[in-house]
Length: 175
Image (cartoon, rainbow, N blue to C red; front, top):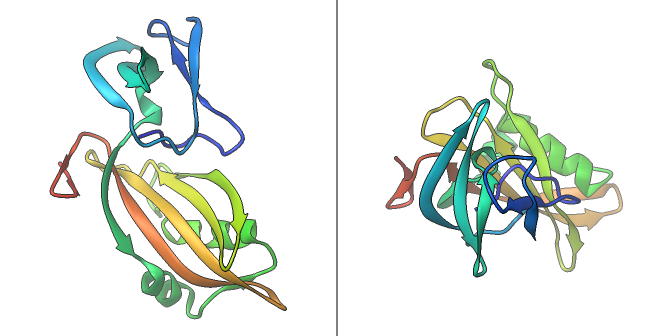
């Protein structure tokens, strides 16, 4: 899956490994069905991986990919950490507050990236990637944050966290 790409950007699928190669497709920031083709290239400072994106074969920077692990409800974790059910004036502010709960106190600090626009319906939703946790198998989390609009702003209803794995998944856990 694609990770760490801002909601208003894309992951470029390139004809060959390297940022200077021609772009053959643009992959949305929340795309989850990339298929690795088994080829990688080390172009220091980063790795490139060959993938199939909806029938188009090309190369992407490996730093923007992850394996999708299990999904957990982390609502109580967030409320326990903050001491109350948070309310913020905007969904973006609420999303940043919730995502920061998953930030690491250790170096290096994680990247917190809004990967989907705010959607509104019965509940408002925003999605953040929290990546770079410093674990060799756990890359981070994709947070789906749901809130109810109130007179004071947006009140947290639930947080679903998808485990993002850097090397692979077995029974939903990172390996």
